[in-house]
Image 1 (cartoon, rainbow, N blue to C red):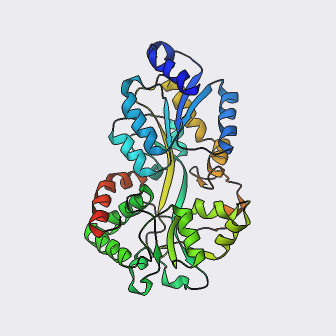
Image 2: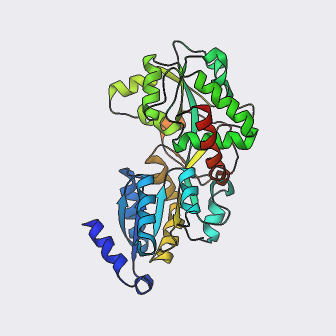
Image 3: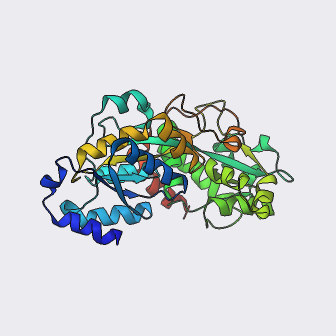
Length: 338
């Protein structure tokens, strides 16, 4: 029924609909129970009703390309910097200038031209098997390529955006040649061929199938908060390392959103993005996926996430990650990180 409603919106005169209609059409890659309160509170505060379609990042990007100028969508909300950059390169976003967003969202977590803004962040960390690995053996991303870790490394596909963004950061810090040497070393140290998601990597480390793995922090915290005893047991068997604390810091990625080029309700879309930067929305937005709020001073109110402690984060601009993503993919292909 929701699809049909949005299709009808696309068929009408978008300019006429845009004039004060209290509706927002959202394409979202997020699907967390806490987001229901997020959307309900926005409607309560503004009177703007939210219609939404939820799907994976790639599916939403493909859908928007197919719909083109006839798309009913106002806002795209997705969960990776590389995909935000892809959407921008495909011309899907309209620049949204907002003093409120520019004041609330750090410059490193948004596009300089206002095409998209980050609203939560997470770190890409190293987890290790407490029984078999000394955390001093994996203090940095570079150490994953050290021969001492031969046969220890598990990872998901090199082509996954989470790894692409990490490698894009490595390219910015060390250049392509050095990063490719590192990637080849990681491949040489793999305990198995890349497969599965980040939760699978944590499970494999806990089971002793490998000694160390890369994961996003929210997967780790999700297992800490799980109602399933076996999942809490997995995470109890692994430790977490914040890589590169003596250098540029631990890599961050974001979930973010932008107003779409053909949005029929651009003013409502801008108001929604500004709402996502409010303290109230930041708490819902971050806690739904165990991430940190993008706005400095906003409280996550997540005991398990807070238990991870503080760390030095890489201050590299998220926009740079997108720019370096194509080079990262070519590099990983050459290195055999499939």
